[in-house]
Length: 454
Image (cartoon, rainbow, N blue to C red):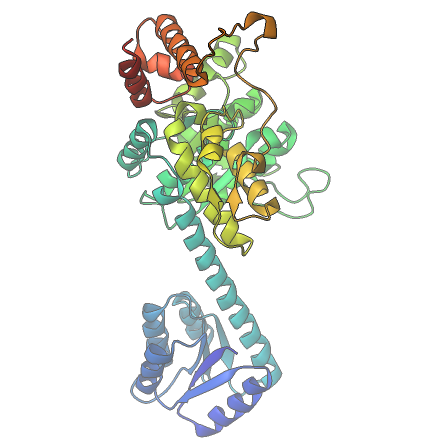
């Protein structure tokens, strides 16, 4: 039940509105003066304020200004028996939701109240959504304890306050959108929109209308005017994913917006001015596309002011245990299950898997395991990994065992030692490269090299 505050120096108006609004499901608070009403507004935070314009002590316009200072999202309806066009315009400019003349039809007031409360509800939902979005793009939700990710976090912190264009590169599923969002929500534009568009998911003929909007009648099916993503992102950030898939003709129009901040709707002649920070992402080789002539060189340099390279998950295996724990907790909570644990051997399997789909693949794998598992413990069998072993197979005839027997541990150690030597040779003595070939961390590699005296 929404709370409505009525401020009027006439008791009769209190009774009329109280009976009417309680009949449509509102809880009504009343005040006989502006000062009394403001005190109630501060302590009770109503969803809507209805105030008379002329009252002793404090006018309705002053009440409006004070309520808006208290909470910009509270709608205020002004009532007056002495209305003029000038006072109505003044009230609306000051932020009034609506302006109604006394005596009014009570049904008309009920309609206005319902609209105002719906506006307040949408404002709350929008505020909550923005808060959730901001939370989603916090560093806490971008799991990255590894050195490469820490460097990216440092770069984000440094470039966020600037207006520079950012090109985020990385394989599909590495979290490029999360990086873009982190930049936006640490910038001065954080309270403005963060608008996203995947250029690879929309045909070229539709992409132009999505970016720049269109006028009514611009093409078949354009029954009304529609703003584009640039307009929606005005004052904020526009993130274009898979920028390398954009057609050449559209690249020219995008370049013009980046250079001048101006464009026109499809089918329109009015020039629209916007202030938008552009961030782009790609998993393709843009330099090669520039050489081939499928991507404009001038646009490439315009969007590539600050490059960010997001490493694939196989290049930052140190982050996998933390990612696994994060997603296990997330999906256990979402599905109302008890916390689940991942066995060490299951974690080892995940750490040594290459994840061609990167973090997105890991996330989906964890969600499936949590949802389908009936146990509180996740084992290697809980995860749907491809049936593919990186180890070479040996024929039975190639293996010999001495009559006195052999320690299986010794066999494993000899094989491990051989692979360590081979990786070091193949990596030309560079331990970092050898560790990558063996899909382990450099710290583990150094430990094993010392262990075997290599």
